[in-house]
Amino acid sequence: MKIGVIGIGEIGGTIARRLSENGHSVRIANSRGPDAVKRFAGEIGARPTDVYGAVEGAEVVLLSMPFPAAAKLPRDLFDQATDGVTVVDTANYYPDVRDPASRRSTPECLRASGYRGSLGVPSSRRSTVLCSTPSPNWGSP
Image (cartoon, rainbow, N blue to C red; front, side):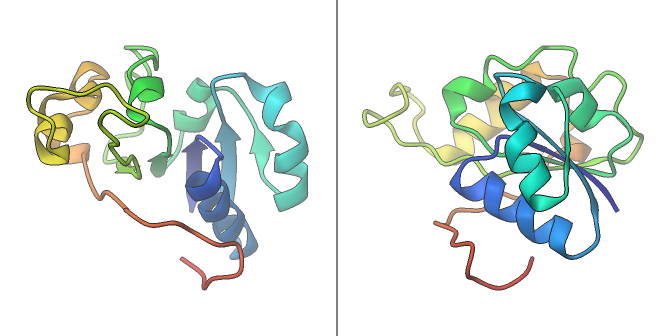
């Protein structure tokens, strides 16, 4: 399966590693560009790319970044996405800790009206939110 991962921190990096280990074609990106992910990509057998390259041709796109960072993704990011692409969002919302507080501060409200709508990801392409602290030593996805 062709999978693009945007954000390679604790969650995104662990999932990207496991997907690559299990034979998937994985492209990884972050906000700092392909050079910033090159070392990690080589380590896990993935291809470094920019955020557009992570989406282009992917069957699944994993968004794994804090809400404030996701809000800065290009508005046209999914314009050329494959029809039927599945978008998986692993974001966790931490009001007044890492993320700015919102009047509608429940994660459900933020997801329903938040950054993904501004990225042009149709509601049929929105999907799962994973809330966990991963470990590279845990099981496969």
